[in-house]
Amino acid sequence: MQDPNRYDVIIAGGGLAGLSAAIQLAEKRYRVALIEKNYYPFHRVCGEYISEESRPFLERIGIPVSSMSLPEIRRLRVTAPDGSALLSSLQPGGFGISRYRLDALMASQAKLAGATVMEGLKVQDIRYVNGWMEVQVNGMMLSSRLVLGCFGKRSSLDLKMNRSFAQEKPGKLNNFIGVKYHIQWDDPEDLISLHNFKDGYCGISRIEEEQYCLCYLTTANNLGLSNNSIRQMETTILSVNPYLERIFREAKKIRQEPVSIAQVSFAPKSQLENHVLMVGDAAGLITPLCGNGMSMALHASYLAVQAGLPFLEGVCSRTEMETAYVNNWRHFFASRLRAGRMIQSFFGDPWLSKGLIFAGNKFPGVTRWLIGKTHGKIY
Image: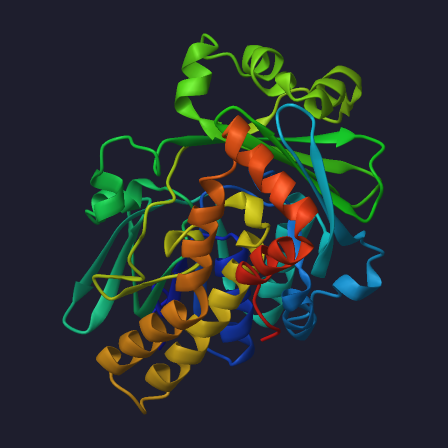
């Protein structure tokens, strides 16, 4: 008889990386358990823009984005705190969809494919014991041949596993906060905007049902200077940018309270920890201004599954699987993360962001080059 607590693959975390991996593996008839601490659907801090490189993949795993009448985003606007602006075409562009809707669709598809989706449960520990992975979940002990770590930007598991980035003291790469609203607004449907302010930037783009996602990243220091009040920070720091001042003054919030996250780290991360394959934001977080975190999470799940299948089929060793995944991840994403960190050094600085906008207007090829450095190809 089959042990009900034993699986082929356990996935810790049910974001885009975890859900898409669960769908792919369940479709191959492997016994998959996905553990998510929340209940679908729910809101996440996310820019909610997916570049076109991921459209065919989403269609392949059963998410019919092309028939959902989603806004197609083909232009980019960048503004400096003083209101100077750059407008550019965005190639290959992308489309907007809320995580509330997309994650729920993917969770349903994972269940339909045969995965066991455990909601409202938290992974407390992961251990490698005699060739098996043991996963402690709310007092239960589950086991599997393979574990994928898809637990997002920061988790208590990062500390439990003694990951190096989680041990670092607050610094310029690892002490950010993210805040997201859904709003009613009047920007063109095909436009994504990145508005700079001191030590931060705010992205705005259209999603479904004539709503817009407003999501910004800034330092914890900015919040501290605002008496730890998000609204005060928006009034005194973000609204120095005239574009943001008008948005916060005139836009109607769908939900008054934002979704927020603290201690966001862009420091380099490892893709393998104690035989756990790290996927999505757990493996490395690209700066949101690049607009590609969602696509990278989806693509990384594809790489993890492609590396894991030969191991599950018994045709390669665990070491060979782990080496293949890490090498492929670095091949596709390492340079994009470096480019993102480089571009971020210009954003959030009033003078550098203004200089970048001036250069982009004078030399349009610079903008196209920067966009190309942060986007990938269809997979």
